[in-house]
Length: 384
Ligand SMILES: Cc1cc2nc3c(=O)[nH]c(=O)nc-3n(C[C@H](O)[C@H](O)[C@H](O)COP(=O)(O)O)c2cc1C
Image (cartoon, rainbow, N blue to C red; front, side, top):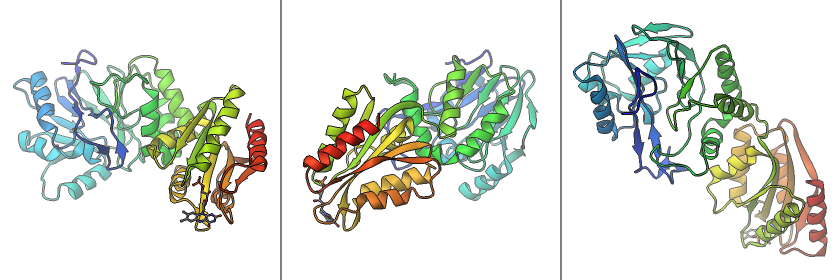
């Protein structure tokens, strides 16, 4: 049984069955639904797990509490991966009081239409005394649903951070890429639109001493916490994390992609870090991740019926939805009779904040020729 502190236990589960998280994010290495238990005069369980995984969760809870019963179940977030087993939990432990925000209470009644439950509605800075541990509730709306709250255990200085600081990946899988890669894909895929709300919640944490962050996904963070707090600050301010160029290519027959490979080669010769993706074949959320990670973005697209090859349209709409800003963008277009893609791509960023376009636009007519190769070389120089 994993202990986080003397009285706080990990009682979460790993999911190696689900292929697509939220029906769209590929889960190559599973997912963790974290839940925690505080064993005090009162017993509180911090969040539940996705339905179908409750047996493993109940087993871990029983191992800790033996013949006792949970007094409270804190519901930080009503998304079904953290709440869909609450019905089964209350069938087993009907006397447990749910601790949740007013919005979460309303959602409980929506997700569980006829379920009767005892509840304690909490708001900003309310506290709950468990005996030794005193929990303080911190509202974190829109990270990334409106009912979300963080909970701070004043005794052990543990922050229960709901989906903030979460990542993809089961906890029994050792991620060779470390924490940031899948945390970044999770953040920009799921939370990225809500940078302002993340900033607001982060500012409430600045006066707290935090020894441990317990998120609802991903590992327990108990060292080097400034790293995680700083990286969340960078991401939520939409600042680039690294210097480098991400090239996103949307190519029908491969000629635009070949030009992107050439550009990558030219940039790498100059010592610039480059990531190149074929949007049609790469997980698009890996692409959002890299677009936000680096300070420069190249969009390369074949013209398609006088507009964009559809996957580029989807990609750019996703960037705009996530408030893409504070970056340099360069454009490559291809077309066999009337290339239009660069114009369409540029117009899409008209309302975006602090976007600088890097010249020249590379115009390819089917395949690279001397002219477009020269433009590509000039672009490589200007992207330095
Ligand atoms: C369905 C379809 C529509 C296209 N529409 C246009 C167009 O409106 N204007 C244009 O110049 N080329 C158009 N093209 C041609 C491609 O943009 C062109 O062949 C280009 O070389 C493709 O680059 P790629 O090899 O990277 O896919 C179209 C191609 C297809 C398959």
